[in-house]
Length: 150
Image 1 (cartoon, one colour):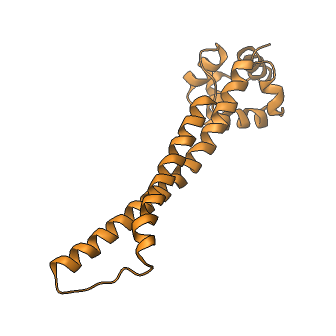
Image 2 (cartoon, helix red, strand yellow):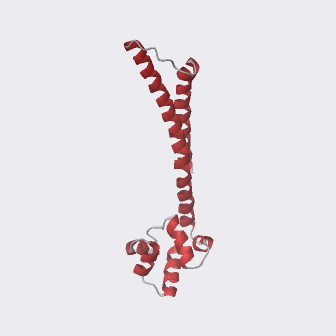
Image 3 (spheres, one colour):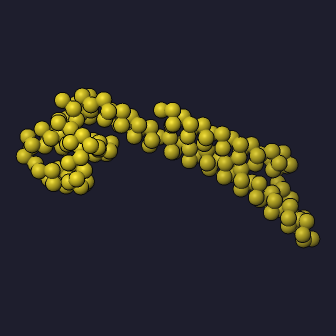
């Protein structure tokens, strides 16, 4: 029995209408209808709520439907990858910030009588910012490409 048929059967056993189930899941009746005719699948959050409502394991709900199992796997990957990509983007932006600070200090030093020092040495300011930007860009792109493959 696929997920759509199983969901419809379980809902009817409880004596619930599609509206009743939709209300319990905080979704529209149309969503429940689409799930029951196999036109769409629920999100992982809805699957967890369904397992609680019907007192079943998630495995019991998913096991018979290969397409839904694949969707849940993709959804879980989608939750993990953006966090990792976010940190690579922060690394890139840190490199950009270092570069902008360096340029601002150089501009101030050249256009005014001030002589602001770049604390930490030239290596950090010349090479560090570039390494942070390259590392962040490569990492972010790598995560994006990995997610496409999966």
